[in-house]
Image 1 (cartoon, rainbow, N blue to C red):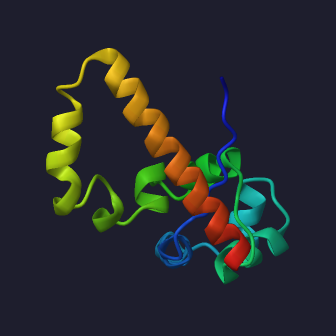
Image 2 (image 1 turned 45 degrees about the vertical axis):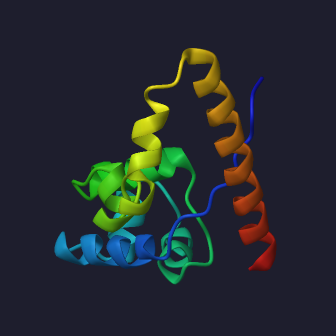
Length: 121
């Protein structure tokens, strides 16, 4: 059973993209040329009005000598919060069937959250 997940990049992505591009001494045009995009797409990404595909994110990370995680997520955005760590540790003790149920519940909540976010913007 496949799920399509609608995801939205955090606004910190925009800041990191601009920062990494400037640190590498690249103009928007130079970055666009290097990853075979039109410069207007880079401008949209940096303005936060468009989001790159996964393929484009990978090309951006490679060109900017970064990892996808570092490009997309801030350190505080990786992993569960302190509040949820114990719950996730408890999940690791579940048997396979219970883990599948927990995963399905989490995926449905994530889909609901992302859909709500997408329609609120």
